[in-house]
Image (cartoon, rainbow, N blue to C red; front, side):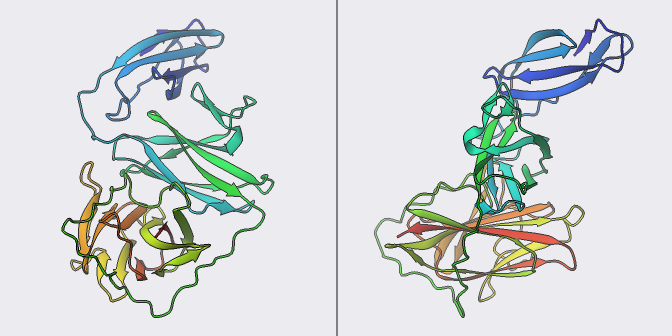
Length: 374
């Protein structure tokens, strides 16, 4: 794209903004004006990111502005599922001054460079004409965070020491939509109330024989920790920033009020430093040593389970069927999810062992357990 500019100053910039036909900002850039009064930019139209439709290009130079349109047609099919971003934080509650680990990924792997992230009070954030701002019209500070090759991203946000208490929203803006997740700033963190059980063993629940097999679980649209819809029938517990190489995770029923909750899903995320992607790996085993996820040939899952739009692999553990999702090795973010294949099943009480295979590298492991009321 090229144009003539009235001014001849090569130091002056032209602002270019592209909006979709729904008013969503899809692209923003500044272009330098050369000595001849011309400028140009190149816009990569990644399949799966730029939806078919008409886009409007707005350019502004000093007090002058103009608009033109172009159309995108896409003959390629990237997935039958809805393209979206799943995002979560490593905890639900934080103190002022603490760091929030924000992780996210696209619902399936596409070619996309960055996500624009802004954070503000949950009751005071709006999106207008591609800008994330407060209700008073003040544009919130934002940061561009790169996606990796698997469509994942991470961002560390440090809460200001002066932050007021209350709910905050993390807003992620990409060309195909705006997505958010929540966290709360409090003056006191809740006490950890899940002590590990000694000598816990993994046992299979007694199954009731029926003529028809139980219905299968609806497979999640993502792998790893994600924001869950919390209700009276589900609770989610998060544990984060574990640097030790051995992490025992004891799963068992818990009673809250007059309800009993059983473990339904185990999600984990390993984060390593740049350059350590190929030298730090994760291994997930049962207490009896059975390897579920790892690089050894004896493990039930040895590589990424992602095959196109299919994210999970059907695995039998003992007498119970599971869906296992694993992102694979060689990336800064390594994630997994484990949940029973049958919709009425839960994860049996017992211990799961996570081992971070490394030497002296720095790593951080996060996991969350989802419990359902029985």
